[in-house]
Each structure stands twice: as C-alpha cells, then as structure tokens.
Image 1 (cartoon, rainbow, N blue to C red):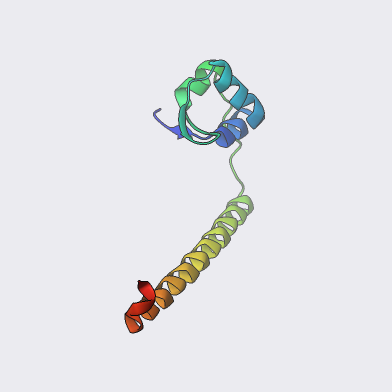
Image 2 (cartoon, rainbow, N blue to C red):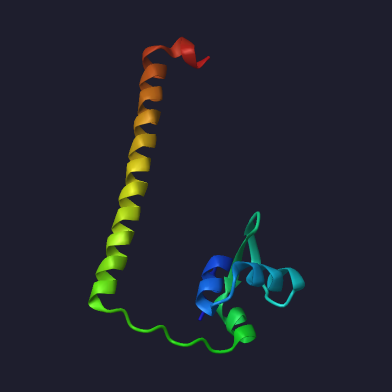
Length: 105
C-alpha cells in the first residue's frame, strides 16, 4: 500500500497518541517526510512495519454511515461558505480597483 498518512491519522489508526507518533519520527524509529512545521507524511507500510498488522475496523452500521456522511456534508458546507465569502471579498476588491484604478497604486 502506498498511502501516506499524517501523524494524527497514524495515531488514530494505531490507537496511539500523536505525541508517540511524533516521538517515533524524532527518534528515527518511524520514517516520515516533512510537509510543514510539525506536520509529516508517513508511509502506511512504514507504520505497519513498526506496529505490526492493524486490526480491521468494525463495519459501520447504516446509522453510523449516515451520521458520518452528515458530518462530512456539514464540514463541506462550512468550507464552501468560507470560499464563497472569500470570493465575494476578492470580487469587491476587484470592482473597487477597476472603478477607481488610482486606489491600486
């Protein structure tokens, strides 16, 4: 498997804390590619090499699937609203610059 995980995802998957995952990285026990400050990309196979095989998660009930989807929809709606707001601000600034070019100098 060539999947990459964040430290948070690796912690959730293994049942360990993010602090433990980051400590393993710092100690060189777990290979990881730095992404940004305190953020890493961890290869799934490298994680499994340290922890051993992970148990398969229990299948979700239909109710749990619906709840998970509803949470995801809510998160996407919030994200979309944020993008719409940013777009409107950019559009307002663009119109101001176009109608009053001396303001952009």
